[in-house]
Image 1 (cartoon, protein in one colour):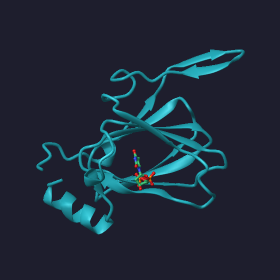
Image 2: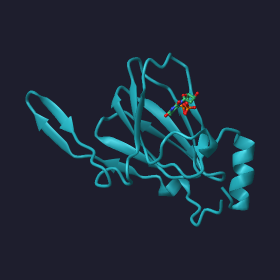
Image 3: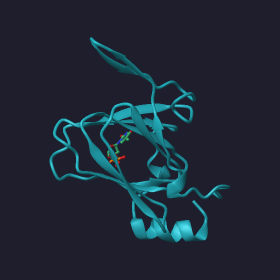
Image 4: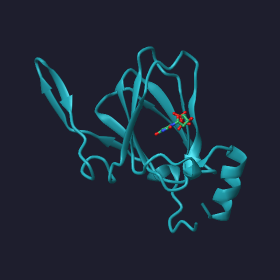
Length: 144
Ligand code: TYD
């Protein structure tokens, strides 16, 4: 499939989410297509990640993600085949928008960290690129 836009690391924005702070606790909201920069079709979360474990290690052809550290912290390394950037997520009111065609690796999970992922598509293994060398080749050719 030809992708009309080839996204880069610079297109993956950290988005501030609204905070309703109260003496009895705080609340953050994410609405479809409002704070979340796409239509949400799926929600999943990573938890009980052992110390030193890594997640991700793949790119998606079409799927977009919005990732929030709702508890604890972890690092997200994003890579477009030529530039690589690591973003630490450690606040429940910040979300990282990962565009299609971006390699991601998640690491340095703190104890008790919960990684909430809002996704633009249903689960489809065919949308994954799980080999980094293949990702770089595909990216260079501009075809995902
Ligand atoms: P994967 O996306 O590789 O996890 P991560 O990127 O967090 O390391 O998925 C891990 C496993 O879970 C894989 O066998 C597929 C399965 N899975 C589903 O069945 N449905 C889903 O929505 C997701 C995200 C994963």
